Image 1 (cartoon, chains in turn yellow, green):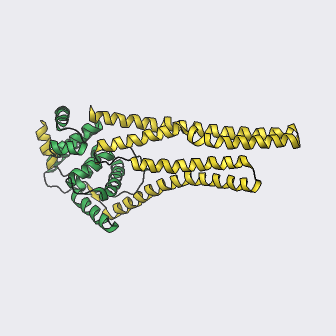
Image 2 (image 1 turned 90 degrees about the vertical axis):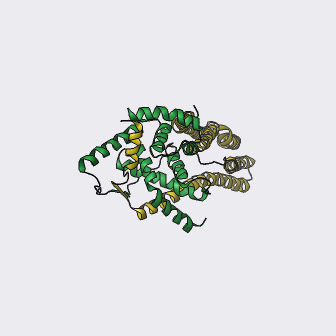
Image 3 (image 1 turned 45 degrees about the vertical axis):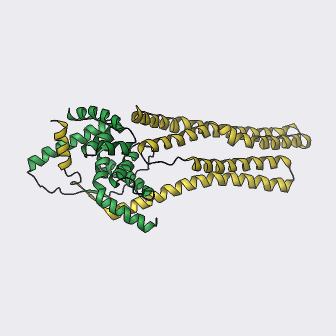
Amino acid sequence: MGFDDLQSKWQSHDHGARLNVDADLLLNEVRRNHRTLLSSLFYRDMVEVAAAVIVTGVFGFMAVKLNEWSLYLCSAGGLFVGTYFVVDRWIQHRRRPVSDDSPQSCIEASLAQVNHQIWLLKNIFWWYLLPLIPGMVAFLGIVAWKTLRDAGPLALLLVAAVGLFCALVFWAVYLLNQQGVKKTFEPRRVELEALLASLKS
Amino acid sequence: MSAGEQEAHFQRWLRDHVGVMLRVVRACAETQYDQDDSLQDVLVNLWSSIPNFRGDSKETTWIYRVALVWQRGERRRQKHHAMFLNEAAATARSSPDEERSGNELIERLYAAIRQLPKVDASLALMHLDGLSYQEMSEVLGISENYVGVKLTRIRQQLAD
């Protein structure tokens, strides 16, 4: 059978004959899912910024209360991270290309977003972890020095354990994000690039 | 655009163009469950796209764009179980044998389209639906020449 015959049979076939659409249920589902999607994105961003605000506030409060300069450094680190989150999202929002909603431009926009996420996560040490490290190191150093002076070398072990715990948490955050790149974003980038190539080749 | 206007627009598109959406999801998903899930994705995208529709392109072209963009599989939603597609008794307008063989042919066509790469599947679907080369090139954002080159191969593959 030639393609023209196939096309003619295709067009005369009632493709919806076996299916009825429950329009009310459908509309409710669409509304619900749209709201869920928007609120989950908003919630995710809020949690990230809120965590940075809490770190900034808690360390800032402690710095004022204890009059300890190293805690100001911790607070400044949190402030930097929170500001980076907000500014980065604002820049990305502004840079979002005006899409003509063709699959090609949508794929290109998605690819740009995925590439940015990969860049962010690969460089998480520089913009997320490093700003927090000077304050933490300074604070632990001061505590260690005071402990050594006041309570002797044995108490220093406790401070060393806390320091080690903080280092492990930082290392775990770094590794988790690299895993996220490897397992989620890299495969998505490959898929989008392949799709884009098939449109352009 | 107010929420009421968006809803009215959506319901009109659903009434007038649900056939396009059903064909796209049937060309991408095999089981009714997956089709139901896919249709939901298409419709969420369609709902979100309404404020951006300025009427510069034909409604059908826009709906194809939205439906086919969904196919890129960039977003994976959690599965839901609200089935809004229901099997209905087919109204026989031809003899049972003719209808059965016609349905089998269409099902085989859907199966063949599902085997094609995503872009080729999109082109096959639009070509079968009778869209012009210009409309297909607008929907996918590729040149008409490229549409022609691709379709030559796709026509052969589907006819085989």
